Image (cartoon, rainbow, N blue to C red; front, side, top):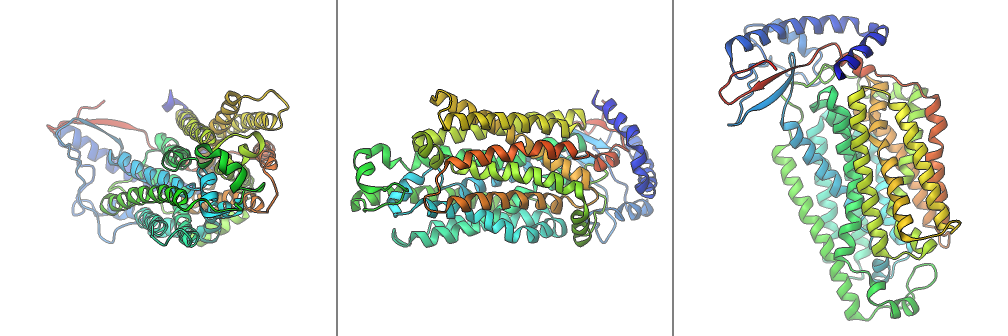
Length: 556
């Protein structure tokens, strides 16, 4: 059924392929060469020699390398796929290969995204305790969170250039190194009175690790995954950032205990004022106990980030030996030319603002659950932590579920986005009614409303990414995604900055969250969905060859 739908898209969109006519003719010649290789592979029952030796057919490789994203200076030799004692299935698009290694690459990238997001959202889940131990205000906690938005806005274009020009390995390694440096600075033993400096400097480096991990998923899926798995791969990598936010709400309160819960009779009356800043110091022994818990959390995050840096350095290649699709080997527009195309594309900005408003505000809102619900509903740190965990896990599930639908159907992304944004608007309105107590409040209703909101709005992320890169192709995935992520982060920057104003309150934050998803509906209504990249990939049909350890291929 999926193949039939793909072919239907090819027929309907055929008129839009004229711009690529000469390229398609070249690819057809390459495909005939690959068909001959496939026939020989089947006859000889060998373990996947998927390329011809450069000395046998130099013209074929010379032609293919003109369109290779990072073509080698010399012609490539034969590529062999060897099974390691077990039967495996290798998906072959004639001369294209989807390697099993792609899942390890995706896992490693996703783990980086999880812990980068967890390090960024360290302070929101433990804000009650941190404010009392360090004599911080709500503004101090908000600034630590805001560094991610500030660094994203100031450095995003540089990192998009790095991804598109220098490749995925260098970009990911740089991100892992910055994350390690940031968590390392936060763990320095500078003393309890100087910790505000080390924490802010560390959060700057943690923030610098975010741009590549937020904008990189579409590039990763394009480089490593075949067309029918791209949206799912993008969903896994992008949703892990929100899973990391949820994990921070789980890990943080488990390591750093809630000071209000354990010493409520003293803290509530003696140590805090009405805007959340402290007016007296804790007893030294008690203060040192909670400081040790906070530093223990810093050490845990540092150790995990160090292990991830080693893994990326040792086993994260820039690209597979053979591309998984047509578009994975086609040269993209150069960085400057692609940027100019994006600036002039009205449809791109419609989609970009829809994504930027909805996800930028939600991302910032989800890091401030503790002050929002404590002020409006009196919900304590531990409870808001579990709300954050469950809503972000639900969002991850939603992203994977709906991304799978897009991969299966081969399109229809705009209608799906309108459905998700409409549902998220209603869920956010439910939260507002609970916060104002316009309807009967109970903790179960708050859980349900937040989980529904997270499930629906997080599910839009991979679909927004894929719809943007599909519509802007052949502009490179890195800069396309980075621009809409910059819009996302700019929205979050303004949102969190307002919270830093003393006495501004928190009730307005729910209303802005509602407006951010509601405004997506008219924007998506006027957007014209296109599938430029998918059209090129549909020029080739998919075949599967099971490769066994005996080296025999049986056509599926």
